[in-house]
Image (tube, rainbow, N blue to C red; front, side):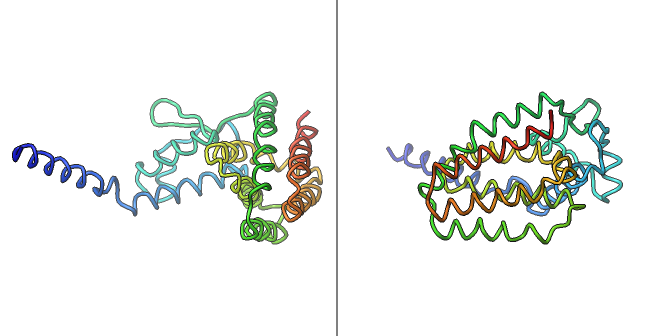
Length: 231
């Protein structure tokens, strides 16, 4: 019995050491996240066009970092669908056909309105104020800042869905938004930004009214508006 007790203590001590051992330094994580943001911004702003090859050594030299955070950043962006990994430590900016983009929009149509319905049914006033605060940021971003508009739009739609409590589904919506947001320039150039902002305001109003059916319907129509820009 005494031997078993010592063995159990040793196992618990080992598990404790593993639980608290750092996987990687915080500075490395922060650096990789910074590289992700910088590459994503260039893709969303179309400074790096679809199909462009991304070489780890070139990016590392331009950003003044080692290849390790660049490699991690490209893997992260590949998970978002913005980058396609290639052999020999290379990658390219993913290209989407019109069919691919319709698939993304179809997925949003199937998931997002239902999440918004659930969110409205159980959201708090504090959560609605958070959504409203994000909405208030839109006028300060110029049309030329496609990356800023795309990122803010993604934050807004994620905030709409978060009160649903469906974390996996919300994460899926976030990925769909990040993958398709680089095409927002088509909507802005076609004069659709004000219409999209008006839609956002009306959806937010449904949260304050606690009208879950109305909110889901507006969200569906808002997503459907994307289709006409990609026929």
